[in-house]
Image 1 (cartoon, rainbow, N blue to C red):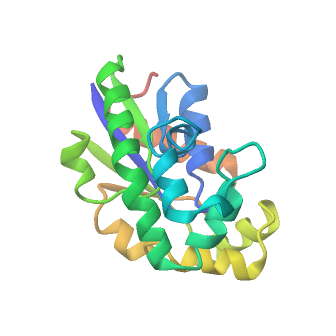
Image 2 (cartoon, helix red, strand yellow; image 1 turned 90 degrees about the horizontal axis):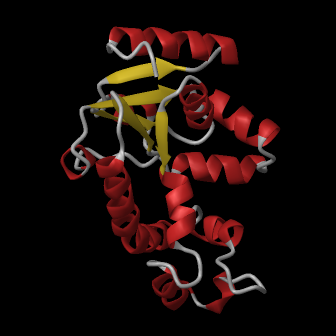
Length: 198
């Protein structure tokens, strides 16, 4: 079974890519969903997050206030490093567990923060990156997802550049066009990879 990561920054189209792959029959493990799971009360990373960031990071129901935490870490690189140190090990272990249980010709992992060491940690076969120009990502975050311009710029500034991301992946998929064009590109890439049927 091939293990393929889908990487990409905010606003690039990872979710649209995952949705298309799922719609044609492929399994997709979503790192963001796992991040949400491991930070729930009683889950692996919850206590450490509360210890690191204090009760200010909690909602009234004692769950992690993800919007507040995101606002903190995307404006403070030290806080972002602290968050990553707490959560990444737990997220990686759960991704690996699900990959080991997966069946079929391939399983995909939507992994926004892909790093070169993930190749060995997750026993990956390929890494694909969905990329857009910075101005496209900025427009999507502000117009489609409701971020303020300042917030969107801050979050994008804290991510890898397209050049950095392209240098560490096997294949780049540019998502500057319509949803149909993205789907056509993905179908072509799947066919080239010998994965025409999910």
